[in-house]
Each structure stands twice: as C-alpha cells, then as structure tokens.
Length: 341
Image (cartoon, rainbow, N blue to C red; front, side, top):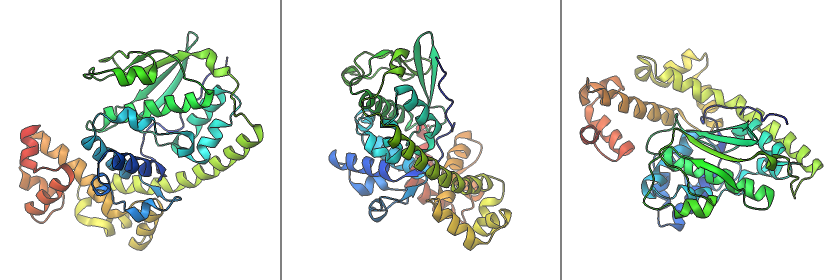
C-alpha cells in the first residue's frame, strides 16, 4: 500500500481564488450579516467579488473569516458544508474525476495551494487507518476554532461527494472545549467527537482509499491536472512579493520608511512594486495595515510600552491616529483591549 504524499505547502499564507470569499459573503447574507460588515477591513469590494477570475491574498480572506466568526461564532460546521467540489473550480473537477480516493487525496495534497484551507491538513497511514490531522497552530485565536470546523466539514463534504456516500469516521478528536450541544457534529460526522484533545485528528478506514470513484475519468483528470499545474505555477510565481514586503515591514525602522524604502530594498521602483502587489491581489497599504495590527497586539500585550510609545514605533505621527486605526481593527480602543486581555 503506497504512502500518502506530503502537502505541498505548510502554511496558509498563499493566494487563492475569489470563490471562497463569495461563498462566505453569501452565507453571511443568508444569516442576516450585511456584506459591508463581513468585508470590513479586507480591502475587498462588491465589484471585486463580481470578477469570477479574481484572486485574493490569504489575509484578505482571513479578515472576512474573522468578521464572520465574530458575527456567527458557531457557524463553522455549517459554512464548511457549503464547500462542494464546484467551489474549487478546476481543482475540484480534478479531484472528482480521479480514479480512486487515494489518487484524489494525493492530488489534493500536491495542489493544496489551490484550495481555501487555513488549518493545514496532513494525512498518514497508521495500522490500516488514515489519520487526518488539521494543524491550527499558525491561526489567530479569534478564528482558529471556526476555521478548523469549517475546513474539517469541507473536507468531509468533499470526500463524501467523492465516494457518493457518507465517509464513516472511526474517531474524531478536537482541541477545543466541548460546546453546549454536539448534535450538529453527530449529524455531520455520524459520531460524537472527543473534545479537549491534543490535536484536531480524524481517523477513517484505509480500505476506502482504494475504492473506485463513480465519476472517475482518466482523460478528464489528466486535462484538469495539467490546468492545475499551470494555475499553481502562476500563483506561486506571484505569491512571493507579498511575503517579502511583510518580512521587510517587520524590520526595525521599515514602517517609517514606507513604500519607497521597501521598494529600494527589493531593488525596484515604487511603481513596479505597486503593480506586482496588485497582480498578487493586495496592496502596500493593506500589507502595512496588516503588519501594524499584528505588531500592535504584540507590543501592547508585553505591558512594557504605553499607547503613545506603541504609536511611535508603528510610524504614527500622533497617538490619536493609532487609536483610530486600532478601533477599526479590533472594534475597541488599545486601553480597553489591554484591560480585556
């Protein structure tokens, strides 16, 4: 029995198609959450969502997820059940037309950066069972549980569609405390999970891996995989610029130098940097905002600096400008955030 492949990416910070954000916005609207509320702080607009070929930075989708999780904290499983094969475009069709479940899982792990995953999956063979683990250690605390539930439900939904029947789990362990009701878990997974575990781990029978799939088609999967290779190659070639900008913005003094300083370090003009960031689905302003938010949390929670000192270190001319930005990020003032922390 052959092993399952290692996932091609180990972190969720890769560009992705717009389809997942559109799905999240539709779900929010169906449950009474306004589009403006769920898109707040993401830099995305209704016009952008209308472009089916658009790509977004992972942190833009993460902002949408965090907004949705704040409004509907118990909706992770329900959202995940909306992720059918068609939501993944050509990647989903490649998945569905694979000869066996093993081929489909291996294809999914090889092209994981064509998915919408945030909690990074890993699949291993253990004693006649498949151990599927979702790593949430790199996720922000306010969205981690929501995303694990969403991703787990999405994977289970896809695998069940793949086989044409429900995938029976042998066991399911989750890191989080047990909620007030587990009926939704039991209805979706056919069993009661064990909560408060050491990880997010599901097991199912390895014999399912070699089941022939009802929609298997060798010509279709070959065509789809070729298109997946081309798409992922384009995305990977563009993904590096946002990461490089973030890396430089976290260095001491970079925030004050702004875009010209970062462009100079990268050996390009500000115009070229702006164009490259637009092509990767983000902007310098969005990345600057993102880095400032992360650094603000880190600097404030140390307790060693005043709000005024943090504002200066983040490149704000006045503390009032920082306080205004912080309220936009967190919905509260830095002082209130510290008291709550």
